[in-house]
Amino acid sequence: MIISLPDDLPDDPVLLKQLLLEALTRQAKTAEVLQAHEGHIVDLKEQIKLLRDRLFGRKSEQTAEPNTPQLALFNEPESDPMLAIEDAQEEVVAPTARRGKRQLLSAELLRVEIIHELPEHELTCACGCRKHAVGEETSEQLDIVPMQIRVIRHIRKVYGCRGCEAGPVIHCDGARVQVLKEADRDPTSQSWMWVQASGPPDRKVVLFDYTSSRAQEVPLRLLDSYRGYVMTDDYAGYNALALQPGVERLACMAQVCRCAKSPAQGQGGARRYRPELDQQVVRHRA
Image 1 (cartoon, rainbow, N blue to C red):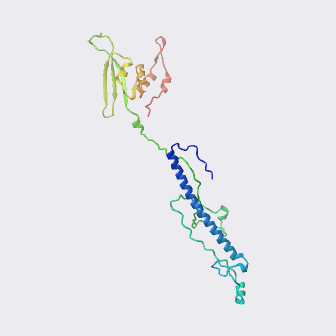
Image 2 (cartoon, rainbow, N blue to C red):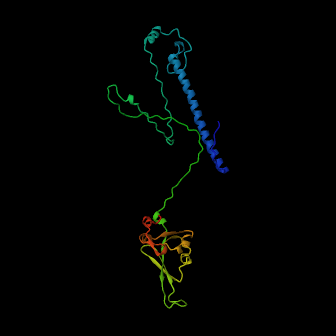
Image 3 (cartoon, rainbow, N blue to C red):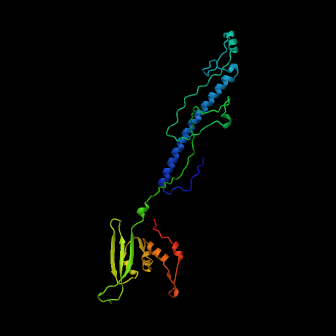
């Protein structure tokens, strides 16, 4: 018997040996079952042949005793002729073959139910009424599926909470300030106050950092090693921060609405309205 093997067998000799042992074990069990069935078939054939000889064989070949397969060795001349005639006149009734008690199949085996129902044209009774099911007759037979080698893939879904996956969010903004009498600086020079707000709803934290610059190095320094969401306005100084690994920049909704509703500066000092900004929708990615 040629057994086709799959192409995706493991390369590990230990796993291959285990698969081979399991296959040989199943094959041996199948051979035992088949051998038992073959013996049972031979026995049934002998019984059928004997029954046919009893029922349809010539009189001289029929057994003298209906309960034994032993044929009569001699035709006794002393047999009562009247009895033979009476026996000939009696109606011959075929003996009912006894069905042996078959061993129940193991309850651990997989069951596949096949429902046998009458066809539609046989559901009408001779009286004209429609037949209905009043019971069931159940029988079982052993069905042997050929050996198969397959790989079972276990796929386990991974679940998470969108609320927890959002991660920390820092609101960052800068405001222009003017400081008088600052050492080594002109009173008219401009300075900046960088404000950062974050924390849980019940414990908000606001940090103020004073700098003399608005360059992009300032937010990079303030948020060094930070990983999470940063909500800012459209100031280009945050572009370098947004390029850092693990940092995602969010647009401030208030700034978006303000830009959409206010005119934009055009060439020559003229302002023009940009209605396309009305359709912009910025949302927190969940």
